[in-house]
Length: 172
Figure 1 (cartoon, rainbow, N blue to C red):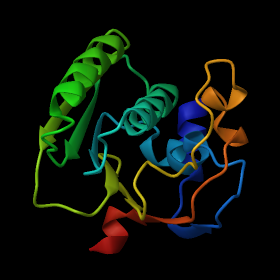
Figure 2: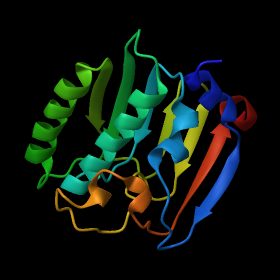
Figure 3: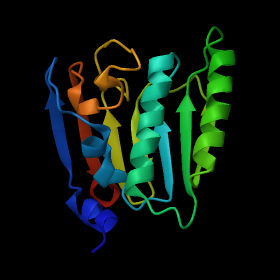
Figure 4: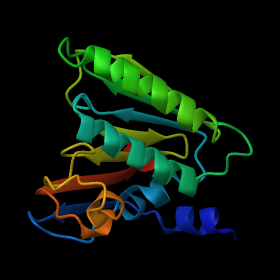
């Protein structure tokens, strides 16, 4: 088994709760096994508006990069709510994300929808990850470029949140 297959084999239905202030929580551990080997992923998170939230999404894409084989393209589609105040910056940031990750074999698309509130990640592997708080799980930290928390999620403290993992054939 290759590393991606091993990660996918570790995925199991579960429900996890994380206490406020806990450290050591990373996107690779939370999401890696559930996106492992996927070729299509849909992320619903209406609240990716601010710079730190977009950075969180980019870190999620880094997890996708780590846990997928890009011999074929991996398509990641983001569904977010529109925000007139943040729209110009969002569009500019998303264009940069498309360019950067497109070079890595990850095709990023997005759409605006004002009807949804729930947050989830759905992969074509059959896994649905229900995100209580979305991708915005980390407490505020000093974003100084020399702060190790900028690159090491395991050093960051989290906000209280829950995550549920459901395999499609078990939800039907």
